[in-house]
Length: 310
Image (tube, rainbow, N blue to C red; front, side):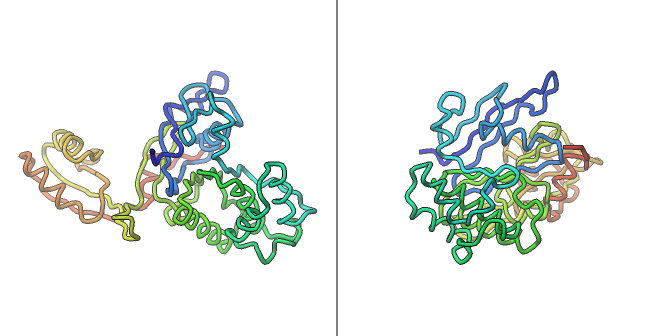
């Protein structure tokens, strides 16, 4: 069975004649926290609303755990848990009563209510009214609600909005635990670069409705906790176009040319094999070095630092 839980292929959305989401393609695998990153107005929320079935898909397809949401909508939705904007709960009721009400509607055993509340760290305050909760606690209660039916994937749109640093860290730790221990796939959108870098295994950068970059932030080795930091390799050669083609053909690396230098993202320590590959293919390398490639570098490089209104 495929590890892919969410598959988005060539998806587009129009508002009138304006194409607000343009041929978007990416996938999220089980146990992976996938960041959806972009400036305000880039198309993040529109894409997420299409995944959740809140708005229609004009072109392309979206599959959840193998089910096409156009053809098997109800089946696909069984595998999704999602929070878009603020969690919708009854403020005059306690967290546990909110979850029990939802469990009754969905015919879910009450034992799952207590498991979900424990998972998000609210077991000690579950009898308090939602109105008494801090914003961070409300967010965790909403997360517990979305986990009741044991979804294969969580869809979270700007979940850290309004949270203080403590609340952000609590949420991050919960999501990492879900991915690692429950093998839950997680798609989280944000514009907070530092938080995405700490949380995500992979990010897709969307700008003006288009995916402009998909990048791994860590590479797991043999299913252990060791990971390799992404770095930016800067290489100077005379035969630049030829070098770019070789990197693509031989190493499957996408390189760009800027200021008479070649820039390519790789794993830390991989530059020696890149230089060796170029040399074997008769490319004289004048110099090569690697710089730690931060998510901020990536974001501003591919979006050119554009700012838009949502």
